[in-house]
Image (cartoon, rainbow, N blue to C red; front, side, top):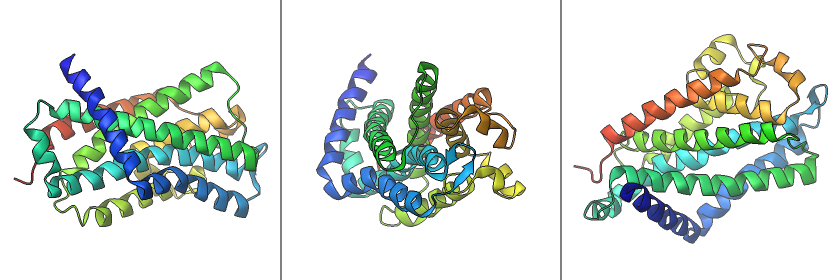
Length: 260
């Protein structure tokens, strides 16, 4: 209970620290909306009966947002915090690594909740985005966001231990995220990508997150357009669950409060 309580307190602190960085707030929350506006304005055609590109793109951007706010931001910020000595100072407090992880997860989820709201709001307002109409779909959406937030957070923490310099973190992490976005069905229809690229993308959680989000926001008929001709909800939950466990173990074993 103490670990959870400290994690919640740390999460509140993480949110406050995030809100104080105005440039990060604007970029993190509104950049996906800007991309939606650009892509939605340029690609107005339908990719399937009853499915506009904007509808497809929103599903991908929500999944991608989990990676951006979780994996990317954490893998970049933790090395910077370590380099500045902020984590070393935390080491002298009762805060355990697990409580620290819980705090980061809370921050990612809170940020993602706002980002999702903005995407859905502007998508419905400007591009006639069709929102889920059943409680079952909203429930699926909720566990995808929760599982995706957890995966992104622990994998970002694990990645942060590999990066030696805070100043070079963005140069390492950002290209990886961009590549994953392109091969995971965020910017292109996944089934239209080369076969080897589809197989490679299937190793990573972003592909399954985007597919899961498509099952929420696209009609059931679009499932036939997927590689497996179904949404593969069960496999999605298993793959994301495995990544969550593996990422947590890697994060616990590799996390360092300081460079030494």
